[in-house]
Amino acid sequence: MRVVVAGAAGHLGAAIVDAFGSTHDVVALTRADLDITDRRAVRDRLRVLAPDVVVNCAAYNDVDAAQRDPAPALEVNAMALAGLARAAAEADATLVHFSTDFVFDGTASRPYVETDPPRPMSFYGLTKLLGERLAMEAPRHYVLRVESIFGGPTAGTTARDGSLGTIVRRLRAGDEVTVFVDRTVSPSYAPDVAAAVRALVEGAAPAGLYHCVSDGHATWEAVAREAATILGVQAKLEAVKLADVPLAAPRPAYCALDTAKLRSVGVVMRPWQDALRAWLKGA
Image (cartoon, rainbow, N blue to C red; front, side, top):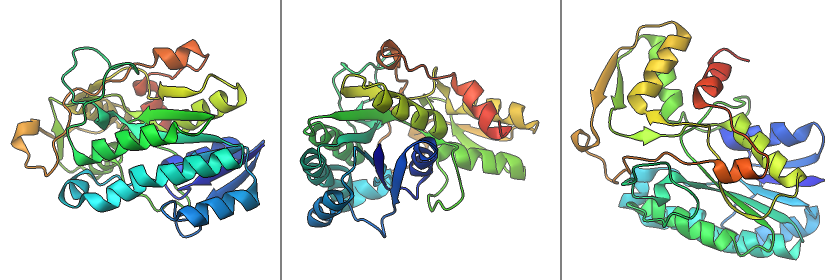
């Protein structure tokens, strides 16, 4: 099976390359290799490569910058998916694309399922929702909602730290860490997400939308305390509420995602605490 990975220089992209690399023919493309917003380049490259699977890990993830200047996020997160979906269809390839918890407004009282109506609060969330819809134009597709990606290979990556990576770096340095007490998340361990993608593709699971996060959920304060416990360091935390922090884009407060649909096709995600320990302990 030939697997083309766009956005291979990020943590998730590197994890996808690693997951498929041992048994499949993987073509890893960074932004320098392929700009997914260039529809002609995408079409021409996929015609030459003739992939069985196209995994799109390229994304515009600066939530606040997208609120101030929507155009780049719209181009990368949404409009590019029209070209990718069409090129994948022409190549008779399965398209895998990643979305986000930010498609929800965060007012739920239990973990979101795939059938819950999306109501993005930010322009970033809106672009990701539009990207979902466009990716689903590919005849064979998996759209996976992930959130708060952490871990994964670091060699050759150019991605900045995510929220959890920043928390861990500051904990290790003995610095004070600012964490939300009223924002609930389901962190996503990049190698486990990559393994889930491989299981879906190899198992020919039904196409569609899936929530693909580590099992369970917690506030950022609880996640930071768990990380400090695993690291064996003192947690110097400044607990804040969303309303206390001036942010250009609003954040959904409750973003737990339910993975029951993923489980129904035989893909089980381990608890976020176990995934966090595996990452921090190098297991």
